[in-house]
Image (cartoon, rainbow over the protein chains, first blue to last red):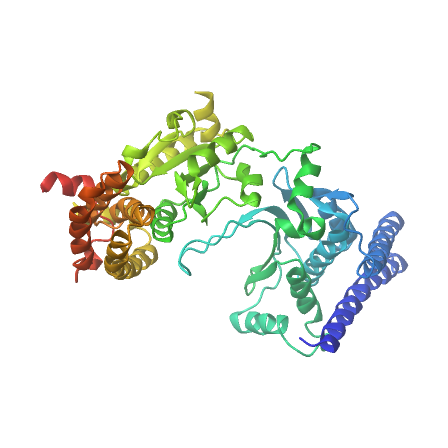
Length: 398
Length: 123
């Protein structure tokens, strides 16, 4: 895209979002004038809309004067609640119930990214409320794992990310309408009042390295999800800073967490052999496991290791030792299950360490896939009976 | 037993079964290409490279059902590790022969993931 087009798109995006915020203020004033809401409701709505407007004005300034050295972070849940507050009264008055839920331990967001994420959410909420006359509006935030297995060669590189999903029970769209909407996301010419919000939302998400996906069913409702890489939430893409802030400690530590029995097991699969990684990844996926594959253990995967219930790691990764990496994960506080992959059982413990003390299980790849299948099946069964306590934690406790 | 095993693994995911079949065909091609690579490495006495190739084959061939190649590769890797270099020409020749003749089979559809232990029990 040329500079003039980028500038035009940028201005069009701000134009749309400023207009949305000012429109909210006017709407609350009109509601009060026509006695369709109480004085307090109108004041609350006007106050939160003006706060959002002021934040955007500050955000506009920050686009040319961003300070990435600023260590000011905002909790993810507070950020979501702020935006929802801005729209809550309009939703209430239409009889739309709002429900905000989020997974625990979501990251803090650097101040310089807050306005962008808020604008994305505000656009999604604005559209959802406009298209709904009843029912429930759900906003949920959680962790996402990108793992598209079939595309290529192996699973995607480990990219911890987060999503915000807005689901309404409004009019919904048929396939043709949805297709037109998706086309507007990538349309070249901004056209006032037609799809600018959709395009702005997509561009904002892209500016953070994320993406927006939309599904809809006519008469049932629409579900929009924005997925953002974790790196996008920290200033300058510094995950280290983000994690340091989370832990209030200068050391990088793995943040462990319990898992919900209603979701799939999450596995990080580390093997530098593409063919082995593909095969084992496919097997895990067939067992219903969410798999993220990686040829190495990049720093970001170390940091987010706690998001995985199981880490399956080859004993030899290039010139590095998977066993040593596993040991580092344990030292960093990883409490999940560690499964070692051995290419040759005779080479076990060749580093002079007892691998049984590091790995919960070591699988000899030469044996074939059946042992892996059996192991993961056992994990699944234990998970179902373990409630909120992770299988991995039980293993460690034992 | 082979068919039963693959059905167990990918029974509910024909998309994965298809992807695996494609992968296995490509893997077979890569194995054949390794024939000259490992022989060249041995001729040039690049023992680290011989071991690297053999070790990788030892682990991965088993996953794709080429247990015979896997065990031959394992023997090569072990010989390098123990510095039994005099045994290598014979072992690498045998491995190279198997690599050259690797056959993913016209019935690859039926052998998505073999159960090597079962195969071992029947041979």
